[in-house]
Amino acid sequence: MDERRIGSLRFTIDFSQPLYEQILSQMRSLIAKGEIDVGEKIPSVREMAHELKINPNTVMHAYQELERDGLTEKRRGQGTFVTNSVTQIRHFKERLALDYTREFLLSMRNLGFRPDEIEAYLEKLTREKGGL
Image 1 (tube, rainbow, N blue to C red):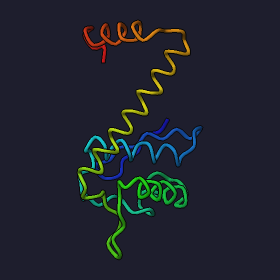
Image 2 (cartoon, rainbow, N blue to C red):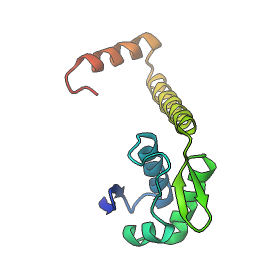
Image 3 (spheres, rainbow, N blue to C red):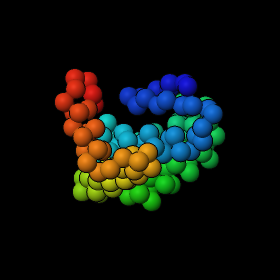
Image 4 (cartoon, helix red, strand yellow):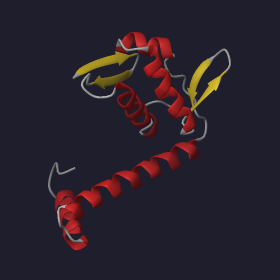
């Protein structure tokens, strides 16, 4: 794994995994967590590709997906910016949370755990110091 910085943004790149998915996932997280502010300009495709030492088409593909998600918007002649819609970001974050929760529950059920057992594990983890 390789850690790279682009301005104040930090990316962890694993060259054994699909780069497009890593950039997309990390950008989604940075926006959802508010580490990239509403309305903030994000690095250009060329800048991101240069700093991460990857193909610009890979970055462009991730940026197009962010725009489809409604998380970013292009401004002609100015670049790409995080959406100004706090509501859009909140809805996206809620969808992500639901997806992660579904994946977790499915994994636990595939291990044979019942809902009450899953709940007990969650309660135990939240009570333990450093559990979460």
